View (tube, helix red, strand yellow):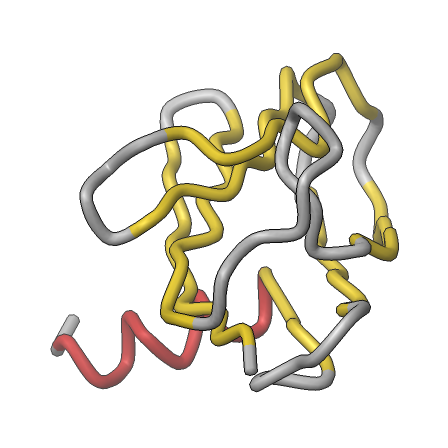
Amino acid sequence: MGIKEHKEIESKIVSITPNPFYNRVNIGYNLENGSNATLSIYDTSGNLIKVLVDKRQSAGHYTLSWNGRDRNGKAISRGTYLLILKTGRKIYKEKLIRM
């Protein structure tokens, strides 16, 4: 499987709208099987900004809205961030841009 094909599969797992975003962003993700799911935001230095989801979930489609605030309630700065979804043994990464 080529890199381009792999990226296309990943993009169907996680969706981010709008991206770039200002004050609020909607995140959707699909779980093919029930598993422990962790959805987190990191800055480009690898520092954890916020954990949005950390629990066992059944197979299905999930959506949530994030207000762009860190785990202390402070608005994050403009810039590029990384959304990471960990499900079982799989890890999906998507860029997230705050304007």
